[in-house]
Amino acid sequence: MTEAIHPNEQLAETAFSNQSVVFDKLYSGNTIINYKRRRVRDHVLQYLKPGGGILELNSGTGEDAIFFAQRGFKVHATDISVGMQGELKRKAELLGLTDDISNEICSYTQLNELQNKGPYDLIFSNFAGLNCTGELDKVLTSFPALLKSGGMATLVILPKFCLWETLLVFKGKFRTAFRRFFSSKGRKAHVEGVHFKCWYYNPSYVINQLKNEFDVLGIEGLCTMVPPSYIESFAEKHPTTYKRLSRLEDKWKSTWPWKYMGDYYIISLKKKL
Image (cartoon, rainbow, N blue to C red; front, side):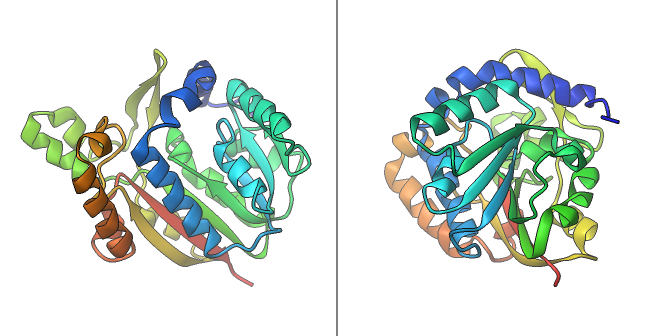
């Protein structure tokens, strides 16, 4: 019997379906978003060989699915947003990638109901889609059954501390500076006029949930020295500073304390043999 989708996820679905028709136009030209995508994709490619099967969660308009499909991967792209899935299908058809990208509307809290259960070489979730649930434990519990022995999970998640965000206290933006610290019951977010909650999870939370069946491969901080993309036009206004910060971040991304101080972190874990 199909479980009812949590009301917060229903709100998020409405928000991102509303945004789906303008999502690529809003973000495709953002220098820092492109930097983030490059970092996440490089992280995956260091571990996964072409030809592998990827289960993508919160796949959005398919930018990552298309990237990986064009490099020899088979991607099953899932999302709760009907609008986002529609954009993904349209783009896959336009690019002739329908043999390499399949799709399915499914909440990541209901992965046991997936029609295509794999098993997969990688479960992949980018750009904080998993922060839209207060039931991340439920999502993570479903991973082992969907992965091959030795398979991976790579997740990009918002942690409870972001250096750049905390520094906004010096601009008097107290609510933004400290919003992650007091988020156990969720914090309000809004997209396209729709309000929903998001939660923040440190790497230790993911590791503790999966420690019995997974080993950690790597953790990287993302937007630790490079500012978050919502600090508009930083790279365009300060190109020299941006280049210096991106070089420093690329160098120190996996070291303490930087891997724990970003707007996001990238974590990869490997299912035990």
